[in-house]
Image (cartoon, rainbow, N blue to C red; front, side, top):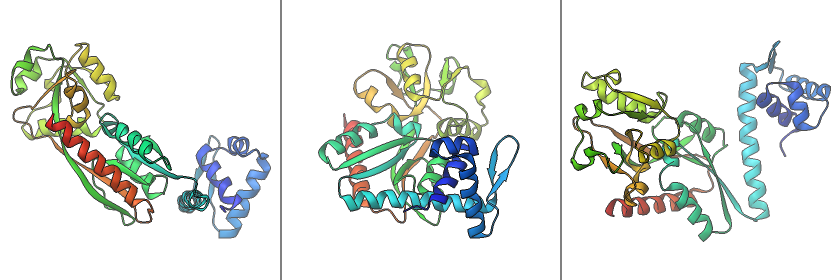
Length: 298
């Protein structure tokens, strides 16, 4: 069982407040403070910086919190396996992956395997790495590879950025979009912090061009919203091919390559060295690859 002192520390670290942590744990504020004091005495280190506005962790406190998160995740997994009621998988995906076929594939997998339940969390690649490292996720779909000692990875697929257009846009009659074509269009792009946007801008800079030469009218974080705006003919976009395959197959949108731009992206699956669910992860990945291959053939 996770020690009560560690449970209290996790609540304080999450809420950044003794008052909020006490409400979350149904304890008095002095009881919460006492638990933290006992923990500091046990490890002989200062764990909490008590500021005026909010509480922060010391370097030692961060180490203890990271291990406490791992202990908590492993305990939850152990309890599930001991009761043999079901296998609970926590999966992380990027916003781009959220828009491809993966969610439907996961839903189908749980239908075929009633003893498996899956929680899907959407976040940025750096945050997904951190959650896998802290055992908060069993595995994650990411769009870049970071070397971490306790994280394994394998390549998932190669994706490409494409121009996404309304079916009635005159440019759909062409086989390839030129940069001059793009400059005449209203662009609806992902946020600057997204990998998709970074790849697009880096590709322009590689040929001595700049995003400032294009008419960016909207910046939207949600890919589904961007595709909906394109269908309503508010503009065109640059998105991952995999994020648009369903709409292309159903003839709701058109995608075209962009001349002179090389916009390839590698996707990976990452998982902890201590994962006990590798066989399930591999089954989901195989289903995804089979589905994506079929979509491309159609």
